[in-house]
Length: 328
Image (cartoon, rainbow, N blue to C red):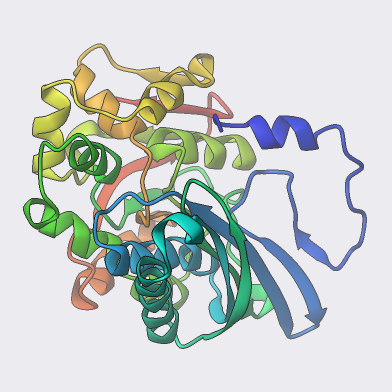
């Protein structure tokens, strides 16, 4: 499904007016947030997709990490997860599915949450993910709509997972060849979340299917600011860049690049391969964080000390043009 399709459909639905709904559909945020008490909010999200790795156990882990990332992007902690499964059991049998579910179980357990069942349907195309539930204090919820002028932007993981999994699907590489990216995709964003809460930041979103360009633009539009990204500062997987230079990229990157072109300004100096990377759909990608300028170095240092070694300062927030993204 292309960028914004679901949002455009839901625009015609009545908007929920319950004051306990702290985050809904308005700014395409990472998860919904519902206040249960003055000191407790519930965070709910769901994500699933077809296999993008050959190893079913690894795929299960990556899919689970990807779903849990939405909880961390909101500043929360996962507590429960439910499997969401579509699988051709009659044709393939259950051994592969068992490996996928084991991968998901291991990653949910690593997050300190409980995997408590789920729902499975028979389908010719396998799909797996999670419905994840988390909690946070209502005053500590992070959204993608509070970036402020003069903030600095930090990205915590390198780009390129979509390009590399496309190369894998085309038989151009093996999973062993993309070890660095696999480690990045398997890593939970919990350390980055903890560092954000320790330092204090204004806004956050995780980089997934719409790529860096799409999710950064959502933050710019939701916050009513301009996000300015410095091309040379963005962390990029070198193998993914080499494939992009050879013209290997997923169809989703092309759709992301074309989406809302009028709101994204890319300098002519930015090469086409880099454009593919900035638009590359990420799976279990990093967090894009908008942090006050005076706290940016402390956050970056804290991330590196916590082991989030790919984190980089990649740009800043400007007052205008509002609702736009500039890549220079």
